[in-house]
Length: 195
Image (cartoon, rainbow, N blue to C red; front, side, top):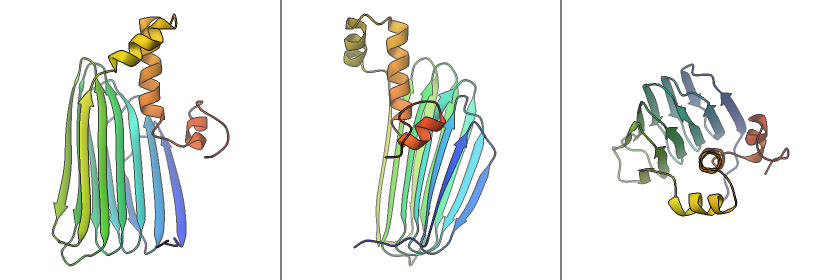
């Protein structure tokens, strides 16, 4: 079944760590693209009514101790919530609390939390929290923290790239592949046309 969204909004946030609070109306689609060259403390609070579609793509580099809190409250029925996080921590501590609540008596909601990080010499804490007060929901969450892929690094080095350059290519790929070509072009990367 195809859903028709009465209102589609795209928020493109680049290095603006101000807190964000939104309420989605019935039938509204919202895509929030967040990219940070230096992640700082931030709170994102969103409420979903009925038949809304929310996508949060949050990515960036950790250069100081940070706390990121994302809270989505699913108040109605037929909503889809997708939260994607990609981060790289080179030396500090990053704490990501990502929470989605599906309230009692709500039905036909779908929730996905996908949190991934590359950790070099820092520490990362992911808290993918699903607060589910109903049986009528499909919910999944993933959290992965790892290092750079040694096989990919070796391959790039075999093409006569320095280790430093090869690592930077892999880091950019990890972060930037989360976004559409349109948003990447805003960051000075990727193609100029939309996907």
